[in-house]
Length: 231
Image (cartoon, rainbow, N blue to C red):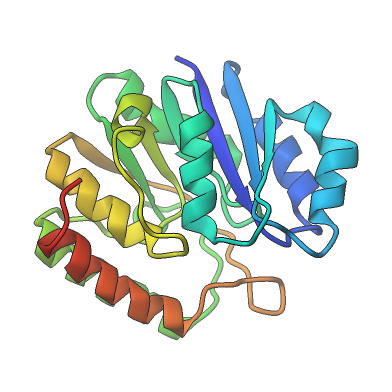
């Protein structure tokens, strides 16, 4: 099966090149790499244009900054692989673990796979306590509405059969993508698996972008897309 890796990118000049080469070095051989630059202003855009375009299959440039959800919407539409996976443009998630993510789909046991940072015995950097509390709260709230028992709804690593994700209308432009897609995937009735992954979290000083306002938006999205929206 061919794997499409979608890399949404905004102001990641310090890590984008390492991420691209890490994805190219993943254990998956038949791979399509699509980078969506969400109007970076720190030199990331220029690095992609001058050095990295030849290293990937596609680079798509947004003319204005729209957010992670919008970048993923663009990337999903352009993907041609049998399986699509999300890879953030930082160094928090390890492409060497793609095989863990795609195996349940290849084995025809799953249609969607969530990579859980809180399941299994893989390395997990110790960072912010209140982020962990917030993540647990949002995951629990989401599970109450979807009636699925995820341990990490907010994870970046999500793998989808292409026909499933391309048939879902993504409305959220920012980090609300995570609760939105979880709600809409749950409504499809497809087979959802979760696998343990490692996590090398960043601090805000190192470039982490998500904040408390995104948490408030996530609560709104959990309610909206579970109660008032179709897929």
